Amino acid sequence: MTDGLAGRPWNTTTARVAVTKGISDVFLMKNQVRPYAWGSRTAIPTLLGAPSPSPEPQAELWVGAHPADSSVLLRDGAEHPLRHAITDDPHALLGSQVAREFGATLPFLLKLLAADAPLSLQAHPTAEQARAGYDAEESAGVPIDAPFRNYKDRSHKPELMYALTPFEALCGFRPTEPTGQLLAELAVPELAELQATLAAQPGEPGLRAVVTGLLTADRSTVAPLVEAVAAACAARAGTPGPFAREFAMGAQLAGHYPGDPGVLIALLMNRIDLAPGEAVFLPAGNMHAYLSGFGVEIMASSDNVLRGGLTPKHVDVAELSAVVTFAPDEPMLIPAVPVGPGEHAFRTPTPEFELSRIVVPPTGRVLEHDGPQIVLVVEGSVTLTDAQGTQLVVEPGRSVFLPARQGAVWLEGPGTLFRAKDGLVGTGTTGTAAVTEPAELSLV
Ligand SMILES: [Zn+2]
Image 1 (cartoon, rainbow, N blue to C red):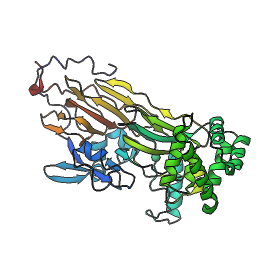
Image 2 (image 1 turned 30 degrees about the vertical axis):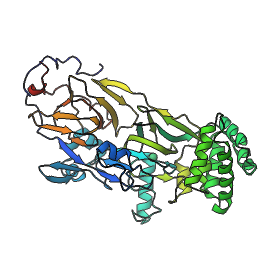
Image 3 (image 1 turned 180 degrees about the horizontal axis):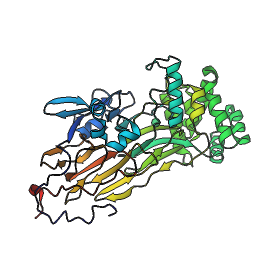
C-alpha cells in the first residue's frame, strides 16, 4: 500500500467511533438523468435498479454542481441544490485550498454516460481560450443560450472516460502514413485531391487543410463525397484487413449522419476500444467522439464544446480550428495506480479532478480528504459511517457528497464505488482523523 493509512491497526481495534473534527455531513444526492437521443435505454436504468428498458433514452447521469443541472442534497426530507450549498459556504464545503483555487464552485463534474449511438465530434478549449472566448461572446452580446454560442463558461473541460463495458471512441488524429494506406484501400476516386493534400503536407498542416476544407465546403459538394466513401466502407466492412473496423465504423456513422463531413473526418482519427477497467484522457484541443459503450466520466465542470461534425448542431469552423490539435497523436490511456486499500486512481495533469475506483476491502477502510468528495456506488452496497456513528447505506447508482469539513468516514462493503475529488496536490489524506472502526462492524 502506498498511502499513509497502511500502518494503522484498523483490523485490530475494537474501539467505538471516536469523535473527530467536523460535524455529521454525509449527504445522499439526487441526480438528474439527461435524455439525449443517443443514450441507451438499458445501461443506466439497470445500474439504478429501475425498470429497463426505460421509455426514454437515459444518456447521462450528472453528479455534481454544474449550473445546468446541479445535483440536490437530501437531508431530513428536505432538498437543497449542491450548487447553492457551495455558494452559501464555500470554505466549509470545498475547503480553503479548493475555494481559493477555483472559487465558490465544485471544480469537477462526474457522470455516468451510456451511448447507444455516436456522439458528435468535438474538442474543448484550453483555460486561456475559454476565458478569452467567453469574454468575447459576452462583450459581443451573444445570448448564453443562443444555438451558435461556443463558450458557456470560463473554464476548460479536460475529460477522463473510464469504461464500465467495452467502449468505442475516436480520439485524436492518426499519423499520415497509415491514414494514406486506409484511404488507398478505400479506393474512392473522388478522394484523390484530399489524399494528395495529406501526402504533400504530412502531419498537422495537411490534416488542418483537409478538415477545415471539409467543414467549410458547401454541403452539396461534400455530401456526394461522403456518400461515395460510405458506400466504399460498406463494401469493405466485412472483409478482413487492417482497417476492417474503421470501414465498419464509416458505414455505421454514415447511417446515423448521412452526408455529414464528420464521417470522413472520423476516418482520419484514431479509433480506440477500451476494455472494461481502462480509461482514456482527453486534454484540451483533442478532437474526439464517443461511439458506443457505458462508462464513468469525470471532467472539469464546464460546458464548453466546439463541435466538428456528426451533428445537426452549430459548427464554428474558425473557432474549432483555433482550438483543435491537428498534429497526429497517440490516445492518452491512463494507467490505474494503486493508492490505498482496494483503491486505484487514474491520474491526469488536471488540477480540477481525480477519479479513483475503490473495491471496498472485506475489512472495511477509512475515507478522508481535505477537499470535496463524491462517492458513486456502482456495485454491491456500501455503508458509510461517520464520526457520530451515523450510517448511510448507498446502493448502486446512488451517490453521496462529502464536504471538506466532514471528517473521515468508514466504508464497509461488499461494494465497488468511484471516488471523485479535486486533483490539487496537497489535499490528500490528512493523517489526523480519529475515526476508528465502528464497534458494530468490528471483525473481532
Ligand atoms: Zn468531450
